[in-house]
Length: 432
Image (cartoon, rainbow, N blue to C red):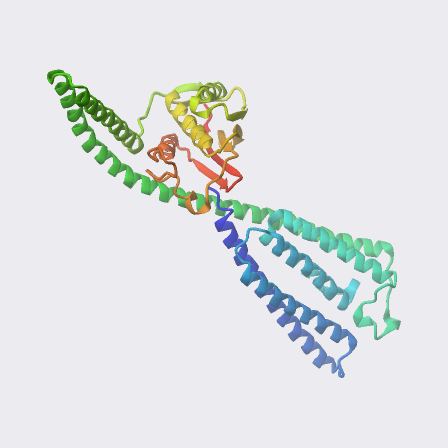
């Protein structure tokens, strides 16, 4: 079950909120330390160097206020652009701080490492590497500009005689050390952030799965009791109608009514059987199955369904020589239900992709993707609920039955969907 949409958005919003607050507090600390330094030096009236630093602090606060306004009115978004924009602008502010506080000799170059770590929390490994590269580039540009005389560290502007120039080797060493530290932090913190994100996603998926299983167990018990209560009277009713047909003289109108009763009785009986199948999927007769061959056979059978009218193209990406052990009929039911579900989600012509993907723990992952209308986010967590359906026909038990069958094999059925982009169902099977 994907969580990148709703949970992911909430997580990013929370991180952006803390980033804005942290930036504001950093400005407060920088203001306090600057005032303390000015008082300690007795630098009055305020020198140009301090005025420049106060301007940077004002810019930090102004940015924080601006970001807060944007966040307040556009917080519900998955777009990482606001985070990238803030982080890139922060690299410029930190580079200015380094330039103002001594350039080559500034002790504030460590701020780059803090920025890279924050980027890994917000934007994970990719974002942290981008920010590390920007920090290194900006640091190199400032060092070269200072050494070429294009820029002078602001604290030295008032004492031109103290300007010191460094060799190209010294600058290269300084930039390489800073850049190496930035990229090392980016790789390490990015890796840890990716692992934390993966673990959190797995925990959320497990939580949803446990709740779903508990709900299904409760509803399954109700369905089983209901099915047993229905099937016995239905059998008596069908038997009685058959006897009446044999004993009562033939009358077209009456015979037609009896046929309707028998047909509806059969339909209710099938529905009750589905209830039982949903509540307690049979263990089945497990066999060794060559998975790619079985999938091809099921797809061939599926493509012959006249209701499709040749409007669906099924594309396969299958690994050969993979064996699994399960009931062939249950495998057929799983795949056929998912294929049919995918076909019904496609309006007009479309494509269904069936893939076999390697996964951990000696499993093989099955993926069924369609390019249909997708599932709205508000009902995505309800599609596995028994009797839930958005179709005009059907009992709403198809996905519930597939879910319960996979449960008997220690597997899970997960779904990822985007409106007007399509839906992907995944499950894993243990290799034999």
